[in-house]
Image (tube, rainbow, N blue to C red; front, side):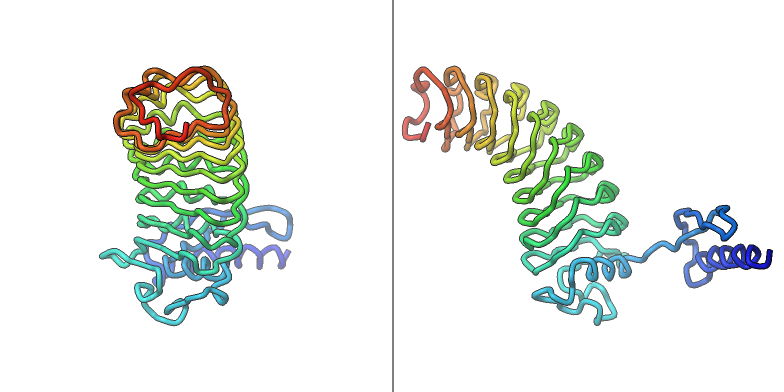
Length: 309
């Protein structure tokens, strides 16, 4: 009986500490503590500060082995930590650790850096594990760049909630599964690069909703199915790379509507049919690569015949 009472006192003490003067106004998530008699009682866990989140990130990614640690864990002000930029309120606005020998998993705690606008962990080549779904909570995020690592698993559908995102680069990892249709809701997106992974399934037609997109790069995956003709609605598109997949069917004539297109790479797929006559309207095209398919017919005379088709 006494053991039962002490367990309840311990839980109550945790709750009081979470709302102590050292943590004024804190609103913490509710968890459940298991008491010795097997029952549960709600407990409150303390909200991490931005500094504590960065400390967690440092430890999770092998900070002691980073090439450059510039002030991390030693400088009292996090704005003096290399790769960290804060806003006027002292909250983390940018976290950039590029080519710095990070290893291990990306901690989900980064999803609590609610003022973060830029997260760039590219080119470390040893970040492993999956992309935390919690990153979908970063409402202010404009740039998410994780290319050049060893990330596995699927692309979280939660990333489709990042309304302010302008650049999403997850290329050169080992991601699997399909491309989430939810990414089609990223209305401010300008760059989407998912190339050099192991993605399967079809190219979602929902990507045609990305009206601000200038670069769509999906090459060197395992994508199948046909090229969505809806991609012809991407008026701002300048670069479209779909090469080295297993795409089938004909080339949609609607791609000839892409008046700003400068580079179109469709080579080494399983495309059939003719080169659309509508491609003659691609007046800005510089690179048109169609080799390694089963295309027939002639090249539209308006196209530059020096292009490697």
